[in-house]
Each structure stands twice: as C-alpha cells, then as structure tokens.
Image (cartoon, rainbow, N blue to C red; front, side, top):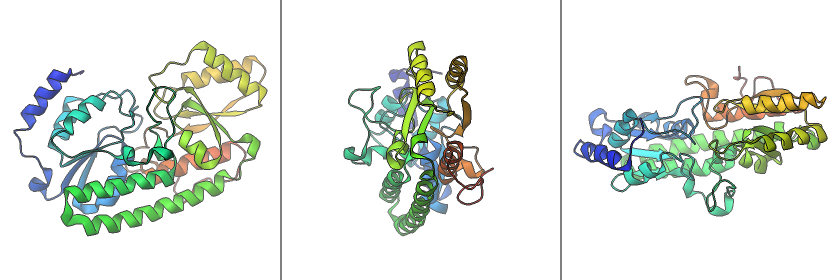
Length: 317
C-alpha cells in the first residue's frame, strides 16, 4: 500500500494519542531500525535492555522499500527509530523526517563527517549511503547508535558503553581479517563488478576498483549501452569473474556473462554478495560481522587470493 503525505500524517496523528513507549510496557527499550545492519548494531550495543525490530529483512532492497501500515504502527510506538539516511531509504525519507519532528528518530550514517563520505553520481548534492561496506566507517555509526540509545535511556549508559566497546573490538578484528585476505588478490585482479554501485566504500578501504551495472540506487536503469560497455571492459581487461547480489535481481549480471561469451570470453559468477541486506536471521551471515566476512572471503577466493573457505571465525557455510 502506498500512502500520501496527508494519509501518513493522519495515521501518525492517531498514534500520537497512544502511550509512547514499549519500555514502560515491557521494561525494555523499543527500537525500530530500517535495515538489518543497523538493527544488528543496535542489538549488540543495547543488549538485554532493548528490543530491536528491523523493518527490512534478507533480500529486501532499501532503495525501493516503502513503509507498510504495520511498519507505521511499529515506528509510531517505538522509543527510538534508527535509519541510515543519505537517501538509502529513498521512498521512506519524507515519512521518517516527518516522524522525527516530535520523537527520537536518528539517521545514523549522517553523523559521519562529510570528508569521509563518497559523492553520489545518481543524486546531485547527496552521498553514497553504503557505509557498512567499510568496517572502520561502520564503527563510527556504532558510536552514533550508542549515543542515541544513551540519550533516550540514560540509565543504560554504562551498559551501552561496555557493549559498544566489545562490539567495536569485533569490528576492529573484522577490519584486520578483511584487509589481510583481500590483500592476497593480485593487484591486476582487484576488480569487483556487481549488479549496482554498493561497493564504493569497500573499494576505497581495500584498494579495489568497483563497477556497478546500475548506479548507487537500484532505481536507476541499466541501458543496453551500459551493458555493451561493460562487456567490452570484461574482454579487454580479461576479467573472468563477476558477482551477483542477494537483494538485486541477477538478470543484468547474466546479460554481461552472455555478452562476453558471444565475444569468446568466459566469465563466471564469482559468488553471491550481501550488498543492501544481510543473510537469514539466526545465521552467521545474518549478522553484520558474518555479512562482511562472507563478502571478503568470497571476493578474495573468486579473484585468485587466499582466504579460509569458512571465513574469519570458521562459521561460513
């Protein structure tokens, strides 16, 4: 269901008459996050003080996602709403900004200094929102989440600080592992070509060239000319592996492979990467650490590097 601004505000006005907290009802802070990556960080930092709900699950594209009536209910009753910002949740942005006029709603990625952000070719004056592809940048987002939780629930400050420190140590180890395995790929092979431009922060962090068939937003269309240009690039540079994404249809990637084959150049799918969503809940890949571990391990092994088949912690499938 698509809501107009008028209908959205009417629904919010109705919910404004309800008690504002899940915390009073269940003695836990009610936190709603848009993406799984944000929800995972909030759960790690919040521990048993918080109850976290993610609106978007595995395989969901946040660029195209629109809030449902159930989402509006959850958002209106949350003690804290966390969203990425930087136009990741493009179809929800106006609603979330309106929601934040009278309750705690935090765009966690927008707290990162602009000098650390990458510009967007799709949207003039905006930035690439895919910060989670660099664990060191995502650590800054974790600090913002810690501070947001503390602002809403000062009594939990000590717990939030201790949990955040423990989680940040995990992210430091993740950054060390990913740097190590990705550096084993021959320099000339450090090219990640995938369905859309979700990996620019990855490229900056690890010294890889990244190419997307579509732009930063999956809402941008890939024309035949773009496909033809990338086929020529695959052939000319002898690139032999490309990647599909769990939250984006693979038809454009397969069109590339078929186009290269027509030119006598064999290209394989090097693996499936998590771009805008994590894996299934309850799995290792359904955590942020597992998601990035999977991506780095998959890319390293597909492009001629060396990484343990089961990843950093021996937990990959």
